Image (cartoon, rainbow, N blue to C red; front, side):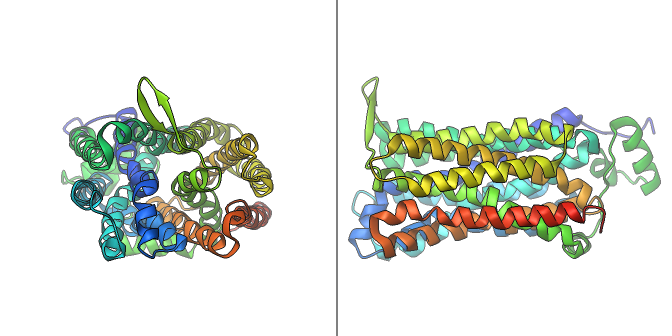
Length: 441
């Protein structure tokens, strides 16, 4: 065993996976934060609010669907290779958006360019799929008793990326315009990808897999020296099959559709909401004009992300089910507040937004605390299904809210939050069933 060569530690593994997700997840603001620029141009050329909502949600389509195969793949080869491929695809999408920002936007974005924007948005969203890969990568490094805290830190810190990048873009859009902002974003993504290449590490068992070591030696060494309790399945199809046959996986998919799918949906929708419904404009700071809508959206994202970090530790201390239940009740209250908001009730809308953010952050942490215990034999596969199908809400919800606006006109911006009342109530039913049958496989 003394001849085994293993690099890193659980802490270093957590830092690497968190960096990969942080950089990749920044893609969620690719279209949402800049919709105020090309959205009016598209609408003037004949696009509907539904089509604009579909566009800003497109990164969430790739970011959700690709989580399933890539997370399961991480059960067979570790998380490093899948993470790098997803980050590379995201940089390709950003290159295209740089071209759009510099050469097409100044002339005018029209429906002719809409299919191109959809493709670029899809590519940019590949980075969002790093989430489930990192969940698997982190889970293999840590024993189960420490996974709530570790996954809370991983997801919470990573989730701050859209908020931080929204704040950055609030400055850069005023200084350098759309093209310059996309160019800066591209370089940051490229640098982050290169940094992950050097510091991203797979857990002990995956490193030893390439060193001609028997399964028994791998389990013995990694358990003793690194406290690893979860071990890979070696087969992508098996990982997905085992996890999807577990009925609890489906309950967690439903919960995550509401919380994380809703979270990234609102991260894309709120810039449109604040500008179109409340008429917020720009504020001046140090001679710069900053988008207030982006700042408000950043607050929503950062609060929800920080709450997720704290809630991960609460899930370790109490239980994921309890934290999830409390979070859903808070989300329900926030949704009712947002429905009651009028276009002149800015302060009430801000409070409602914060309450929704807190509720979603708690549910996000509670759900993934339950994943390793639910399907310990195929964590990557389960994380893929839950993260992928759950995050699909980020693609589905914005167009639905846009359709409500198309039907109800301006009042639809407030009534659209009825979607979250429905989802929260359904999720509370799911938690009740899960709690009643928590000892069943």
